[in-house]
Amino acid sequence: MVFEDAVSPKTLEQLSNVRHSLLRLHKTLLEYQRRGYERAGGEIANSYQLLKLVLHDQLFAWLHHLSELVVQIDELLDSDEQPKEVEALSLLDQARFLITPSEAGDEFQRRYFESLQQSHDVVLAHSEVVKLLGKRSSQIH
Image 1: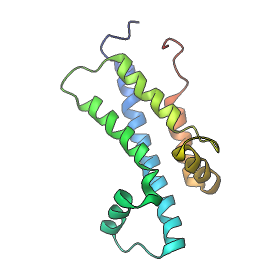
Image 2 (image 1 turned 90 degrees about the horizontal axis):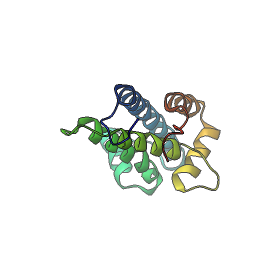
Image 3 (image 1 turned 180 degrees about the horizontal axis):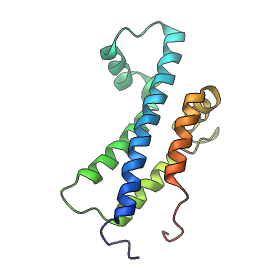
Image 4 (image 1 turned 45 degrees about the vertical axis):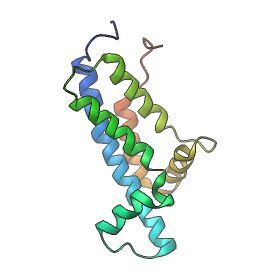
């Protein structure tokens, strides 16, 4: 397969499925972070307050990496131009890298590692994404 070609239907379907799964993961992580915030600082009164915290509070900033990846996937899927296979595969690789928890990784990976240790819901959402992502194609280098 030549990766400069248009994205294959199989890759497009996988990317779409991964996007939906990443959104569920994001929602689960947001709820996890919300509970932590409320334990430490009091109740979040409404959705507007939560949105304000998500956009501006450092405790929620680590989640922006996941949000940005979903936006990149959306842009590719909604593009007027035919996406390339290599672009779609690159986004799948970015997702694989991002959701690799690590005590020694970047801020997202460290916080993600912590959330996996503390939340069964995060573990379930994580496993769904991992299953959909599968292994990296050995054809891409």
